[in-house]
View 1: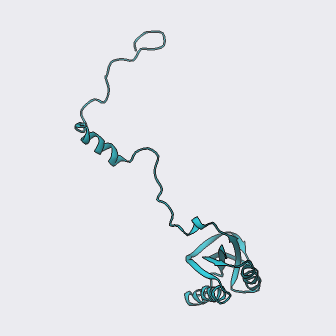
View 2: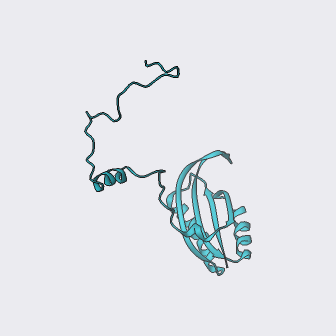
View 3: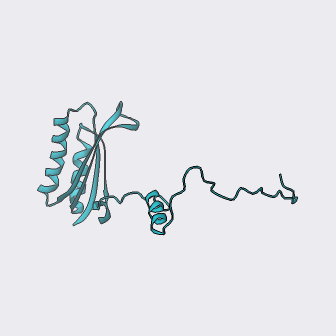
Length: 146
């Protein structure tokens, strides 16, 4: 079995109950044909990049599942004729798509690390009135001071 991601967009005028039944319908198709749903995310109503069938918004749903290639063909066939869907796409996924996303790390050390390092080395934090660097005048390119 292969890992796939199914993304579809439902019409925005569907109520929550109808959207849940559409999601359940496709999950049932996946499980009844020997597939296994690994993860399901309902992203909610979002603005579309461009108008589709007169709609400017849609409800986005992402389902990650394992199945045979024949299952993807059957899902594609059924989704093409479903009037509740604006768009759908099935792509083969990598196993890393099931892992939770890693937290974003800013470049450099976090601010807490700077304070901890100064305290660990025995340095006291500077008070706001202390100068940061030597305040001697800086020579100009001609060697003159300004």
